[in-house]
Image (cartoon, rainbow, N blue to C red; front, side):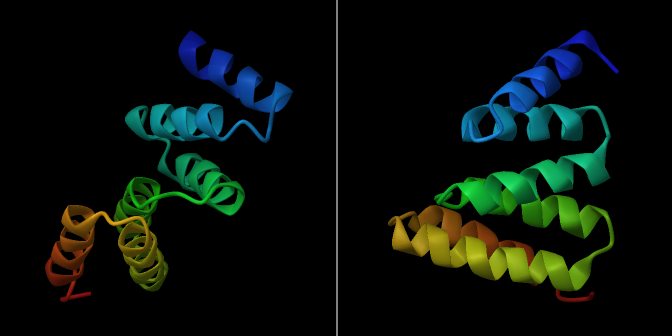
Length: 105
């Protein structure tokens, strides 16, 4: 594991309720190809924070990549709701595009 991942893991361990650290750690895990662990960190982030949609999109894409189609669609629905609630119309459209792309699943 890279030093950056270790540093971020330690930050999350010291302050598990720091949602920005957790989101950053999840994204670093995903960049490193550690999708299962990244999905777990995103799930923790989303459980602790009223995300406005971008986190849900990242989570949905990761679940889709892992072959968890039903979970990915559920994350899209939650993300669309969050994006709509926070007035992010462009993000809502992005979620709709993902559902179209994934309609063959």
